[in-house]
Image (tube, rainbow, N blue to C red):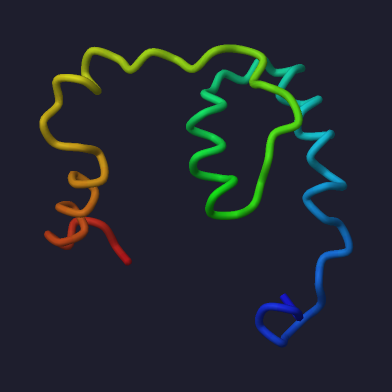
Length: 87
């Protein structure tokens, strides 16, 4: 916070400090994911890397996810535009 915004304090831990613990937790829980998608997004945007592959392969999209012409993001934006969700 301090380094980026000039307020508060910087967190004393870095990603390098906690990444091995995340890997251990993912292996204990059996997290599924795509290493390629993870690297393409998180490494590019946040500099977050993976020291090991996901313990399980990425899940195959469901039938509904493939046939639904309206994405969930579009649906949520429509609900917000209609005022159905409090802001």
